[in-house]
Image 1 (cartoon, rainbow, N blue to C red):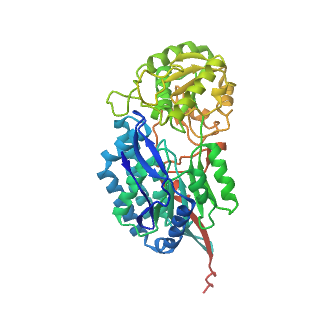
Image 2 (cartoon, one colour):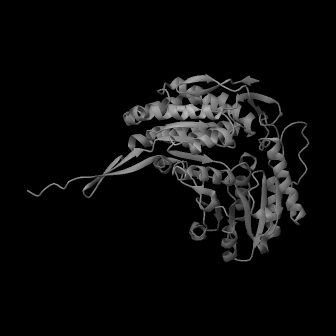
Image 3 (cartoon, rainbow, N blue to C red):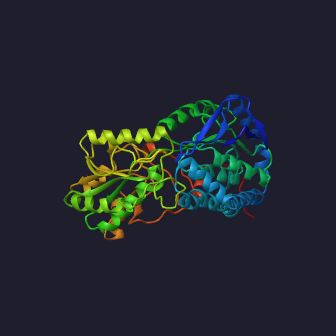
Length: 476
């Protein structure tokens, strides 16, 4: 077990004021793999003031200087890929090989990409007699989740730093060890004191300081819709900018002319990534009513290939869930579905037979569009299949939740799929299994949040616009 006794504030490791610690569990073994300090409100405020003191000098640095620091962080992450992948596989439960590629490889690329974006960005533009300039918004409080911990940290602090902001990070208390390793990498990269700060702790303590403190100019939050509403309420008192990436209940709409086998396989893969612990997971599969039995048979065949096991075993395709609470929550949803009359296509509410670990069977349930599981975000390896009578009803069902984060449309032609996709109120739609684009804007409609992450769109979230009104040059 590793013990972390300090927070990272103002360029140094500062011993925690409180003796209280937070345990971090290995999701496959249920053993305590590490402890981190439970931060206090005073420590959070100290970090905010350090970020404020560092802001002017950091924002004034040449863009190339800031970008070079980001490149150093990317190099540091690459050098510690194996350590970071092992850490996240244990914390979150994603199988190690996939954790290396997705949970570490993606963030490493993003650090370098945001450096490139900053170097190539149009910081000033002439508009009539005005010079419109982009400037960093200021001090940013970043509150991040546990499911893709390093990715979500990176998509906030890397663009913020590149833009000239200073940051205070509160990582998830469930999966914070990767953040501590990243802080070590940032320290080794030599960023000036106060530019990056990390305080571990609970949301109602540390997170609420970031949301309310008058010296914080922006809060970027990823997590549940419930918690996002709380952050918005607190931040509104000081009129901060708030970026929210919240829950989802994404629909994969399979049209009658689709390659059914490819569509079912693609939808299940898009649902089960990270054992379903993905906000944009395609958790509702909408299928023509007349082809329900065909889809059901295909789904049984596909899901049987998803082997479940500890995250460090090479044969595991699905690992455990992140915690006992999460496992129990997901099993509760499955039981609710069964009680409401769901057709159990695969899996069920009995955990796999492992002595330890927070495991749930990959489960597929046939349900009605009005059932609980058609509306609630489950955040586990659970896919629901919903029949529809025609395309009008399919679009209506896809748009029938409070969420609008992701989704997909499958058709025999991209044109047909795109026509339907344009009617779905969601932030991104995969057309016939189109792959994830790390430079495209990521974010949601409705109660899935506001603002966008990734690429230049995510970079612009951390900038203010200023107009300098120039006196027109007199004609000769």
